[in-house]
Length: 210
Image (cartoon, rainbow, N blue to C red; front, side):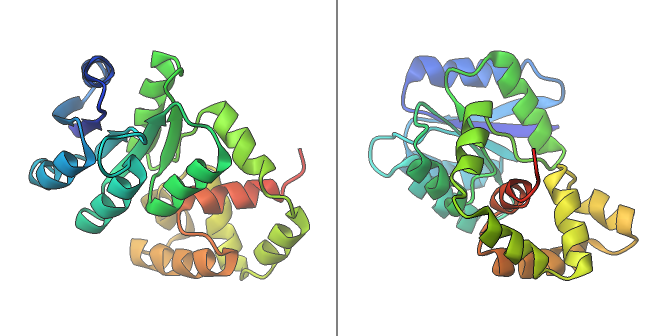
């Protein structure tokens, strides 16, 4: 059973997200919070697997709450669900540790697909956001050079990560341990100057034609 929590100050949206999430198979909403401060205080007790997080919250922002939650619960997966689609906020959320970024105007099926993708180790994004992030890499040649600087094994792992495979699938595919995959990914992140799976995958995709 995947445990979901919702952090959203608008009660109607908060309840709608919680209710809809629970219509998905093997998903249960364990907590809803109206502020980042409330989330930091209560969510560690409920230990959700996935948090749906608004950005514009009263008090601390959803981005700051995301960063602090990742410190308290490193394994929690946070999907930003927001009206904001400017590049600065997108990257701030990804740097804070968010694994996905959806717009509130997304269709319910897109939210359901995002939850499933996170369950499988992926990094969901609304199409508009993915296009914007990829377009923001203004120097594809520099990104290509960084990818080229990776070792053959690191490039192999990065390619599988960019296809949406979780660490365990990558490890099984390559015949190595999860720990070995994590060790290689730390080096990949350092060489690509990124801080998350999503950023690494997007930078890798930006180097590919088409």
